[in-house]
Image 1 (cartoon, rainbow, N blue to C red):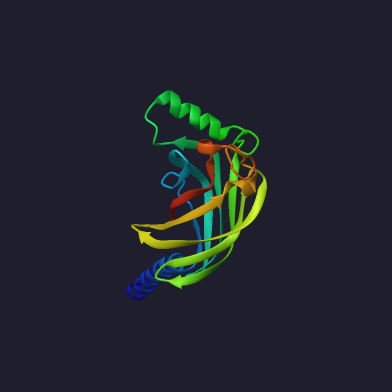
Image 2: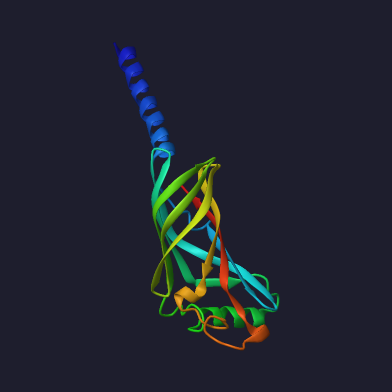
Length: 199
């Protein structure tokens, strides 16, 4: 009798364990690991380019089975960092300028946000996502492609986003707002490369 009860108990425990694994793999919500995740940025001008990273402070993705349905992410704009300049003084000057009102005004707008409204499954772990992005308090629709695959116990999300900064009132050095800038022109489009890990 005791053996029968033990067998049934063990079976139920195993069944519950398998169900939990399946549920987490095939549906539900996955939350961002902010320690491992980052966004790399690249801005170009007539005379060259600069690059760096920004931290993602929080985020999540919601699945229905294996279908991506929605999600949201918050970027900490105060964490803007340059990675290509070796001179500490020039590096600090550029980072301060990017955080100023000339660019992203992080004192007033410390966060940028993306809210995914829907996603189209393209197969092989790729999706075309559609949603709204908010920078400097201005919200615009956006769509881009991402690729997802499992990396150890994490879901890794990669992709590239091209954003026109002039749509978000980021005016400094923009030919969309100022004439005769010549070789001081900074291009409106900047690139964001996603490197996100979720559990």
